[in-house]
Image (cartoon, rainbow, N blue to C red; front, side, top):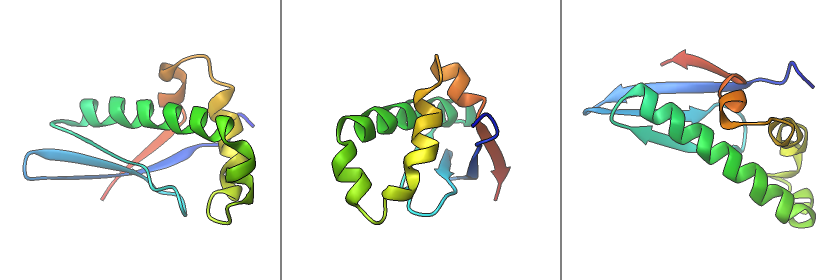
Length: 94
């Protein structure tokens, strides 16, 4: 479980940095005026998605486009802080 990482795609332009979770069906996108702000927002969004997934577990496990997220959601839920979530992210500039 420790080796589960979250590949992140980073794009810049127009004074904004956009970060996307680069996994199939993970429609999580965060942006900010700089890379640090976008990272903080992405980490917050991932933590929120994990909590939402857990709260609506039966629904997400039946959804074909969300069922496969379960293992990574468990990894997110096993973290103790948003700082630990940030440590799971692999950033690649595009």
